[in-house]
Image 1 (cartoon, one colour):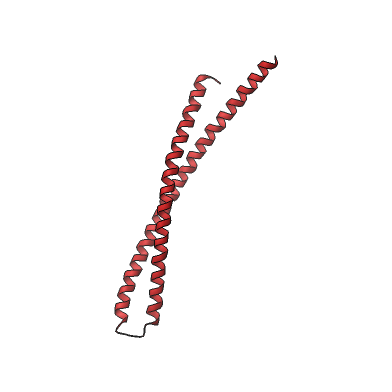
Image 2 (cartoon, rainbow, N blue to C red):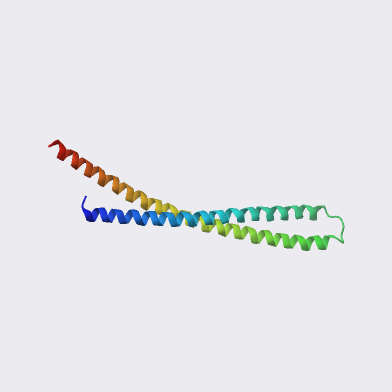
Length: 130
């Protein structure tokens, strides 16, 4: 393996390692945020579902308008929370793809290193056997 090939391989490994570190960190943070938003969306959805049950069982016509107003606000919060969670999941998934790409780059670099070292090892063994 020539020095220039070794330098090229070292640079490829450095780039792969740096990209992997950055994307892993960002993907982790985005995934954590998405999970938090998913819990919030689930809670908001459950609240809206409970209010629907209350509306369905309400027999007092004087309370119904107040319950409907509260129900609308709860439903709006649920819609907002679900949309926020959905967008966060999409963003995290995009970053996960970047993580995969960075690992593929690291795999390529490591595979080239193994091949180069195997070739060098074979060359050394052949020279020692002569």
